[in-house]
Each structure stands twice: as C-alpha cells, then as structure tokens.
Image (tube, rainbow, N blue to C red):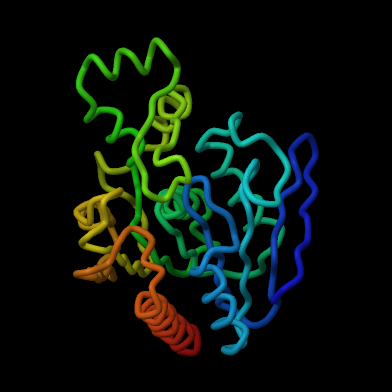
Length: 256
C-alpha cells in the first residue's frame, strides 16, 4: 500500500493522498459523497495499477477522511477544485479518471475544465445532477420545509444513522454544476458501470449521461444484481477489466 502524504495549499486545507508513480496513462480515483480513499474500489484499483506498472492516485476531498477541513462547510464546487488541484499538482500527462457516484459527477466537471489532462473516464453509478434532481423530486411541502430549515434528510443504507442530512445551500450551489440538460462537450472514451438494483442513483442516470456526451466512444455496462457501491468481488473484477482494456486501447493509440 502506498504511504499517506499531504498536499499543502495556500489559504486552503491540506489534502491527504496516496500515490504510486509509474507509467501513464495513470489512474485517479474520485470517491463518492461522504466517502474516503480507503474503500474497496480504491484499494482494488491501487493493487491493479501497482501490478500493471501504471501510476495511481487516491485522495480525500476537503473535510473527508484524512484531509483537513470541515465537511459541513464544503460545497460541490470546493470538491471539484480539490480534484483540479490534484490533477494540476500530482499528475503528469493524461490520466484515466475513475469516479464513483458523486465522484462520477466531479469526473465530468473536471474533464470539461482540463480536457488535456483526461485521456479517458470510467464512471461507477455516476451521480451527475443527482442531488439537485433528488431535491426537485420531493413534494412541494418538503422542498419548502428544506428551504426554511436549511437542510433535509435523504434515506441511505450506507449511512450509520440510516440517512444523510443534506444542506439546502449545498444543493443550491450544486445547481451551478448540472450537466444533463444539454450536450456535454467531452470527446474522450467513457465507460459507465451501473447496478440495476441501485437504490440511490437509478441506472437510467448513466444512460442519460451517455446520451448527452458528445463522445461516440461510450459503453454502458449494467450489472443486473449490482447495488449502488458495486464493491462485490465480481464487481471489482469487472472494474479492473474495464480499466485494463481502456489502458490498452489508449496505449495502442499513443503508439500509432
């Protein structure tokens, strides 16, 4: 396992990260909401990249895991800036971004901001626009209550308490980063994995992402019995296989 390090920034909390320096294309893993860099997918990808001789980075967003900062103060735009900071300061050459849930949303935003740094992308239960659409689907009285109280709860079996408290300000800021209402000008290869038993982000969300992407090199892989996390052994094997295939494709393209 790579050793933990910290990326210092002027006027911003330090970001905790683990890195393997090897050949490109490297892989940068983006975790989901209220998650950290020590999940099963991140560890499986690090082990694969280590054995395959490719660079790899996993890190914690501000206020998450081992990074500094207060989680409650963070907005989606802050975490987008974290990813950009990691790409700009810790990577050389184009990377494959692997985004899980909210990390898939951030992956798309970062690819738009740094297209020259992104060779390909793999989304896992990609949650583009999810927080905003989830709020809009609430009954009017609950939306009004969330606005007045400044927060609301969404149920989740992945939370120790059975739900997450979402800040209304977080979701309103996230509206500035919505992507699915128009074409997404991303042209690199994209692979989208999604579990059909995902009870958080519907698998149709990945289909919508694929429809909006300008890239023609987009594949959707649905796991009939897969849940939101897609962290079962067979799910992880599939993830590694997809990334290995994408790496080989990108390497072959660079050699032409």
